[in-house]
Image (cartoon, rainbow, N blue to C red; front, side):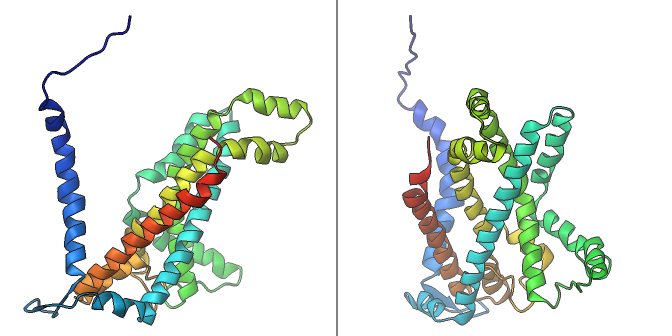
Length: 293
């Protein structure tokens, strides 16, 4: 016999929801409203005078070549970080799913980088690629490539992509490994009995069954690349050289806290939020159609 628990107190549900609603209001709704209001204003660098300018800050951004270049750079950065982190995580998850001896230690070592803060991850890779004392920079010089991310924009971009992707591999690995372990072994074994090779089994059985996990990670990784990579860039290149690594989230910081252009910075934050929301909607609208649940 099924027993149902009912609460006669009508106030209790609202009391239980109140802490979460308060956190959402204080840390999400209120800052977003402040940014939207600030984007309609223009302040002098000393904060002594504020002028209402409407959508002038947004109009200025759409005609600013530096902002448009930063937008293009952000899209490329997001693409490379997402593909690299998800691809590497999938390969590692497949390997971990097959390992028998020492599997637990192998998985633990891969998961560890997820506990590293983005700024620390950036500092680690900056040290390894340091043109003076970096181990990887020394290896690259040994094969004939003079690595220097201080003066070479391409090197700096590669550095932040590697650092940001490495930080996210552990997160993707956890979900891919869980997805692989949830696939019935009988399906894979039946395909093997029918003569399907490892590659054919992966593309026809394993990968389609991983599509829900892959779609979820796609949304998460795009959002991560747009928002959570500020610490990586600030610890490695600080947006340079020549703004070659100034993605949108870092440009919001640079224009607002360094250049003290609060109106433009707020307008950029609003546009950044709209861009991420639009990309998420596109992913759910078109990419999810190919997902097999």
